Image (cartoon, rainbow, N blue to C red; front, side):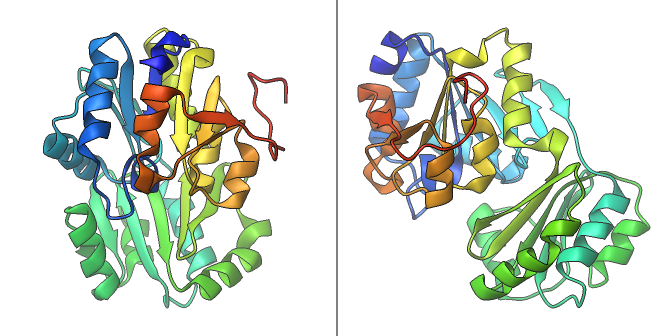
Length: 288
């Protein structure tokens, strides 16, 4: 357990394309390495944009235990399953974002709320999302109005469209995104938006405080822009080799392996990562 030998006490992994392979599975050797890491005193958990029920199923499938951070950082549950943080944006903020990113209702929109997960269209994107995450997504054709009339919190807004359309949407909207909202292109087809209190970085720091662990003793692993906030607030933020170039530039360390090469296994067993020569970000623990 070279990671433990280095003095790191906690490992926080993004799921899709970081801990998981491209086919969204976790290799047997990675699962074994995680369990060995925990048996020797390490603390492990996943921090994902997925809904908590989807993350629960992943843990069940692989026999994993540990803390869970879902909807980016909207829900934080400790190793005993106790919710230690539950944050979200208001319905007014969510409606503003839907109008900003999908004013003509052309794009596929998913709203993750405290009352469930809802979308604006019943189409192939909805079918694919349900198949991939194994959670129900309820159709509300006038999604913005339905949210406006609701009495609940909104954990995340997801906009899905073609890569060129997503790029154009973000370019037009970027200067109008409220300062208390983090919105970014997480994959070429996704724009994801959460309240700044619900970012992955905010969630990891809340968990560290609750568990009385110094951020300097935490390793975080990710692959995309939505992971940058947690890669830059801990002692060892690692971008997997398959991460996009912008994310790599924000990470102090880069893995020697891709997700399909079991990057997390190699990080735990071999500390297979190195200082990033292209690093140009700011890490509060690195003086950057």
